[in-house]
Amino acid sequence: MADTSAGTIDATGHGPGQGAAAPAAQSDLSLILLVSVFVVATCGLVYELLAGTIASYLLGDSVTQFSTVIGTYLFAMGIGSWFSRYVRSNFLAWFIRVEILVALIGGVSGAALFLLFPIVDDFRPILYGIVLVIGFLVGLEIPLLMRILKGRYNLGDLVSNVLTYDYIGALAASLLFPLVLVPFVGLIRGGFIIGLANIFVAVLLVFRLRGDKSLLLDRFAAVAVALVLFAGALGAERLQRLSEAQLYDDPLIYAKSSNYQRIALTRRGDDLRLYLNGNLQFSSRDEYRYHEALVWPAMGRVANPRRVLILGGGDGLALREVLTHEGVENVTLVDLDPAITELFSSAPALRRLNRDAFSDDRVRTINADAFTWVRDTDQQFDVVLVDFPDPTNYSIGKLYSLEFYKSMRKVVAPGGVVTIQSTAPLIASQSFAMISATLEAAGFRTRSYHAYVPSFGDWGFTLASKGPVGELGTLPDDLRYLTPEEELRMYSFAPDMLADAPDINRLENQALVRLFTEEWRRYGF
Image (cartoon, rainbow, N blue to C red; front, side, top):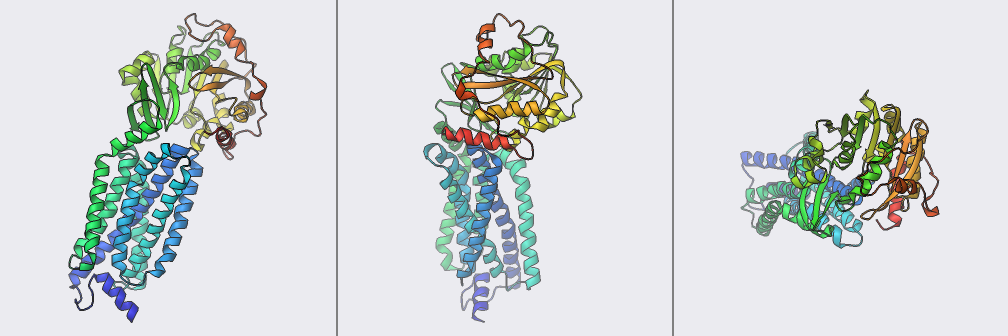
């Protein structure tokens, strides 16, 4: 009887001698508490997705990051649920305090992770520490709510109602995060807004129970946290830019989160640099070396390259090189992210850099997943240029897989030549070899080469064709870097760049992503 009495007192918010609430008020509070289950589930899952996404952006290898974040979060929830047994009274007050803490820690977590990443030596303890704390607090919430609601429903209805609202909240989070928060709100502002949803529940409860003097400090805490989160939401873009200013050496001039990645541009003097998820894509001072090395060894080996396919390359810089060949009749560029192709086809400084390549009548731009597009197309091309980012995660790694290269082989016209950017042969020599080995397993003949690009270091490429890779023909006279003599030197490798491929990269094993991560980590990247 004593335990039931304590639960009833906490559930209604009244202490001894205050009397029972009116039935309408009781029903009103029950509804608020059930809605709280929905909010708790939604917010908790969003915080989990937020941490996993930020870890993927900053650390790469999305599968590993999401797996470890989700596992840590669920483990912490279990510990929180177990610990809830030690809360023996004042359930509603405890729930409100936990809600305030979850709102504060979860709401600021996105900003904290971005701001701390550039200034700490090891980011992972902070990441998993935040996930553990949020998971622990969320694990406390549902058992507390069930004990508060215990006297209001029979056991069957209680479990049914709580689980229903919990699962609907999980669905809401799974839709809200990718469809609204990431593309339209941003990770930092999204965290603050979700925190505001959490604190709204706490504010609603403390003012619904305004007659309870024991909650006076909780009212002040709830309002203070709400103000902090509201200020954070308003200043989210400034916080994002502050974190990126610490991440990049040069002044940030543009930053935007697309559906797929964080896009950042920096400028110092005449040096314009593009970063995707914090990884350098090019420097305007030396990008011509990379793009001439990517484009012309393939273009120069096809007698009449009329039809050209570019996979990736949404900056239009490889496209710029291709369009200087007078024999080219049409170019199809397939890049996943419309935010990139729109930026590089509209911003004046970027249009000057790619010589307004996207406005050329010969160009068709397609924003699609290259894996699916190549698999489904029935077109063939004389030259295929593959300019994907490095295989830092499994969504990119599939574009270096045996299955993708088999699909790509059918789009190569007879006598056609392919070039694939193939990462750094010194830092990742086995990964470099694995790309060539996977191409050969798909039926290509290959020839590897490398070029020195100061902003990247020594960079590798792979030529591929259905038959023997032919000899280089004529190169344009106005290239700034590539000459026939330099092109010949690019096929010579020092012994420390040579390695055997330990495996080929298949969709079911994604061996390249794991190997690439391990090799780059040895160099401190």
